[in-house]
Image (cartoon, rainbow, N blue to C red; front, side, top):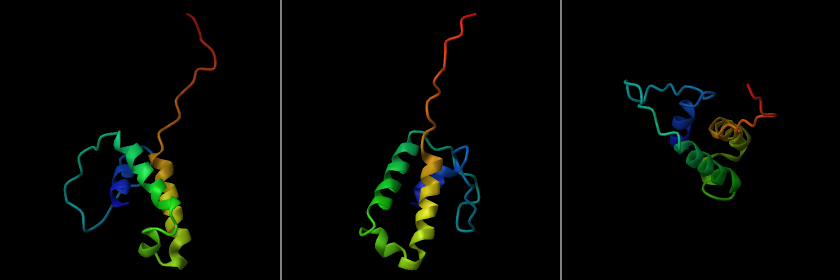
Length: 90
């Protein structure tokens, strides 16, 4: 989940990661193909409410935690391909 947040932070709609525990120098740019992998990992976590995630989060915090993961997935999701409505010839 932390890796997904770091990848999302480098996306256009991503929130910056600001923590006193991180490195002082900026992180290098991560490969863009990691976006899909991070999104898939978060989808698996969100899809298995009885799995490991149930041990990571208190039940009363589950809704907020789920909203955070959903926001990360929205940022990580690749943009839809642009489709020309019609072909313009010069």
